[in-house]
Image (cartoon, rainbow, N blue to C red; front, top):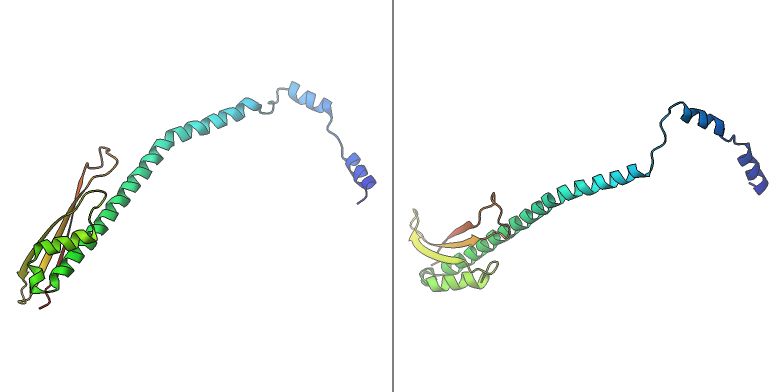
Length: 165
């Protein structure tokens, strides 16, 4: 398209009549929205964000604490399994409580800075086989101390394995 054709096309468009608009506004038609309305929308968004930000931060903190608690439970589960595996290795190891405790603490020396508590027992099941039972206890303390969340959660994991003769 040539430059002359483009100019002619633009010139053919009818221009609005200024007198028509003057009559419209004089008849009481609403004026177009002005700049202050745009500012009020931005202020409304800022107020909404200010109201929701603490709630979102609380949800994020609770989620992080839940993840920490789940990690602690997985750690004590693995530690109890390691202790039971050590005790189930032989009859001598099944009664070696310090060796079982050392195996547990070698797997998980601390969880979030606190060492778990280990206890073990031996016995005979209903079929006459000897077993070793290892219990690992841990008290989880959440970072966020809010009333619906308890100040500490006691976790315990018990693993029982048959002793190999």
